[in-house]
Length: 310
Image (cartoon, rainbow, N blue to C red; front, side, top):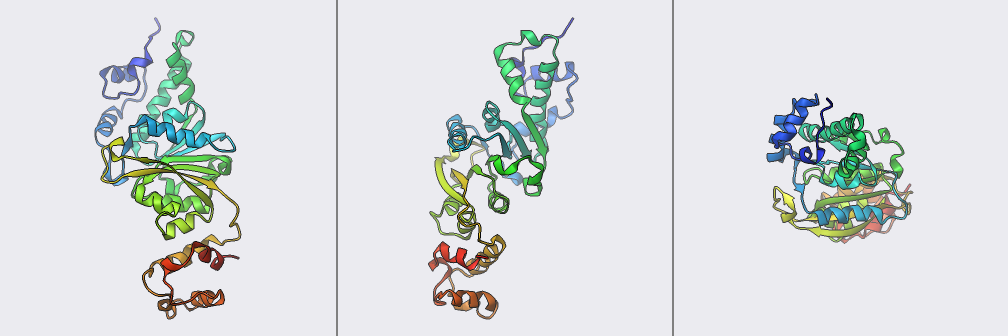
């Protein structure tokens, strides 16, 4: 007799004894069940994990991706965690999810395993609507167990036409943004610490904002309360949308990165303070009639782009 199960009762709750029993009876790898239960209870601080739980915010993120002039063929998600956002994305897109946490990877792989069991089931024709939707969605998910900062974007087929999305960890959000400036996607929607998001958008003048805006137009989508996460972070968050532009393709990003780091390292000092250590940069400033009595925060972002042009 064929073993039948109701996936509706077994999905999404790894602490449910029915789910653990299902894994054992169906020969799905259950070696990580204890780790998954532990993972559900204890998000890891060293990964900066704060899991989004507000569905309204998730909807706004998905809506921001959809309100783009060119529909995405696929999505690259950074740090899917428990898959709260992933589950919504899979309703319309194929998703490649890059995740550094082995327990998160195991948790999401169990969902993929369940989808494969549903496909292979002798009773597949008797599956209810929710089971069919689940099977269709999670057969479109590909998990990459890797640190995104080390992930080769060339491995992602047609990356420049892929949309990138993620609830970025607070401790590495800036580094992820810088990686995507050097290898830009056509569109990206990110949740960031509000202070970082405002630096990126230019509300707060910063080196990071100047660097990101060399390749992207930045748009605020929504502010997000700390109450919308588990565990609750100590700071507020914001969702922003990055849309690639080609207006500054003649700006050398390595030069821009170098010059902004040098000048902003001494942002409260006059530019004359750079003469001894960085004479070449000072000569560039003088060649563009920049007053050396100014400070980094006095310069408009366009000045940095001119300095870094090929």
